[in-house]
Length: 116
Length: 107
View 1 (tube, each protein chain N blue to C red):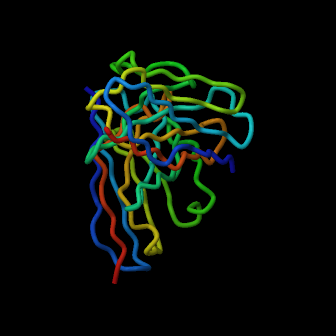
View 2 (tube, helix red, strand yellow):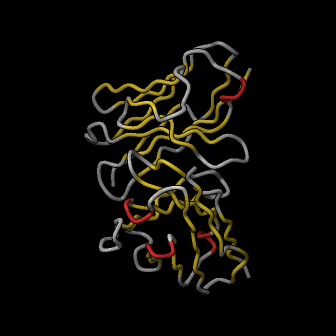
């Protein structure tokens, strides 16, 4: 059974940095592209970016490229999202997803609230 | 960026009714279109990929179709467990873009 478990969210102040993790199990993590997606409190879905199975290539939403970095550790079956200089508009639930046919499997999500 | 215009924003239908949700792409995206269902309080789940292919475990009452740059999700006989928010997603080119969502309720 595919499982994706995100962690690292919480309440952060504007301008701070935060690193989210997603631990994968139930499939061969190193064989799959992985993606991060976020959903705002108003239920708008936004694709953040993805990373190739070997970590050699990444894509990002242009509006986030300068502040967000996706990485992975295949030995630990873990996906990461490094967020820097966070803003109030980054308040959302963040999901990691296994990417194959589409966004095939989703984690349970982790909430990030940016507020002073 | 490719824009995905999804309609309607909300929909109330009766049990056993046929329901159709559409997404219009701002340019050709081929069959790089998938549909997702998000039940209340849950994570989204893949329903349809490649515009028309049913994901594993998805009931056959769900189907996807394409006409040019317009894509449709049809639920042939609405069930209680189908309530939630539905999203389309284009994966033809980065950045991937979602439709704005359709909230489906039972009348």
